[in-house]
Amino acid sequence: MEPIITRHLGTPDLWRLDTYRAHGGYETLTKALQEHQPDDLITMVRDAGLRGRGGAGFPTGVKWGFLPKDGRPRYLICNGDESEPGTFKDRLLLENDPHQVLEGLILSCYAVGAHLAFIYLRGEFFLSARRVQEAIDEAYQAGYLGENILGSGMNLEVLLHRGAGAYICGEETGLIESLEGKRAYPRIKPPFPANIGAFGMPTVVNNVETLANVRHIVAHGAEWYNSIGPERNRGTRMWCVSGRVRKPGVYEVPLGIPLRDLIFDHAGGLEEGRTLKAVIPGGSSSPILTAEEAMEVDSDFDALQRAGTMGGSGGLMVLDDRVCVVQSSYIISEFYHDESCGQCTPCRQGTGWMTKLLHRIEHGEGRPGDVDLLLSMGANIFGRTICPLGDAAVWPVESAINKFRSEFDHHISDKRCLPGTESIL
Ligand SMILES: Cc1cc2nc3c(=O)[nH]c(=O)nc-3n(C[C@H](O)[C@H](O)[C@H](O)COP(=O)(O)O)c2cc1C
Ligand code: SF4
Image (cartoon, rainbow, N blue to C red):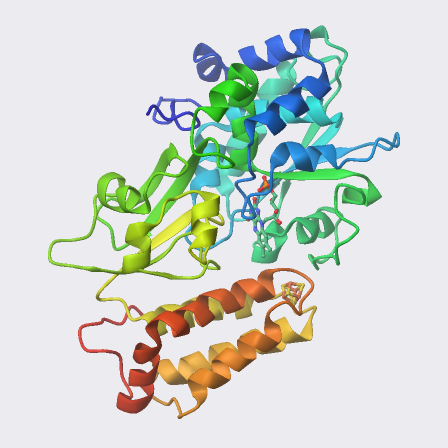
């Protein structure tokens, strides 16, 4: 099928307002402000079954419905922090099609009654920052932002906020703390941001791709959206395919297509003579799948969950027979240790211990009992932390041990990687 969100990517100067408008840009906003009440849009997005593309796959319309109607100002935050290893789809949109994201954001603010919105950008996204700011400026000049938007009476200010390069700023409450000028320590929930979010006010946090979807749902309706993807898993997904494939890149496909089609048709499959070893489907925090599991599963949220993993951030990493799973687990573990905010002891200390153990196993210094010790450490981190980063650090290692145990044992007994695997360190 024709891509929806990425349809115009590749058009020269798509980030400029004139080019975006030449492809129908802002027509949906203009029409929606004339023809729909805000509640119509919430109903539309809820009936469409849109699920968040930031990681958890929570239904967007339902989340919007949680905002209390108590007269306090409401804020909307577009989460453009995108730091999950293996994920690079939001950057593609922010750099190349910022007006599409902005139109989705303005429609979403209209729906939830927000008059102030923030776009929180990952600090290293220099080009995105420039393009998004230019798009905001153009939108103000054209009357899509500011006071009395297109004569509708709607007011909306949008501020771009740049992070400083910490993964934890992608977690919504860490992001809010950072936005408020503080250290990005995730908050204990409840209260949820829908009730007490940025600056103490009800706040919606949505991912970049989620907001881009809103623009198309409002343009074509919930019924149209429901015709794409299986039940409870509607729409398309921008998969970021990386690792040992011939054509790594971002592929927008309907949710629910077989994962094997994504790897072998869209991403060109493996190099000549190689075999598939494993797949990490939803960013580095998602549990690893064996080749057999990956060949069987569909790519929607629910199918991946039934298979014991998750679609997460859409960062699909392909491992062929040359990859050492112990080494990839060590690399992932080191990332989480590095990015732990340090607020809770199990995560701060536990991720460090796990990384040290994996380091010694990988480097031929593992001792009998180390693998079970790793599992026990994971059990002492999992579910005992303020935010899900603790769980995210455990899942990849625990699943790798459960599915590739013999490889870990081989490292301890033979003090090296399995023959045929290559080091990438
Ligand atoms: C450690 C951690 C990092 C996260 N990083 C991101 C991120 O970079 N971008 C993002 O959209 N969501 C990220 N999330 C999820 C957000 O907390 C939040 O659920 C999401 O932005 C909501 O948007 P959605 O409902 O549109 O998916 C992260 C969550 C955790 C626990
Ligand atoms: S789980 Fe880790 S990252 Fe999350 S709040 Fe605790 S210490 Fe910080």
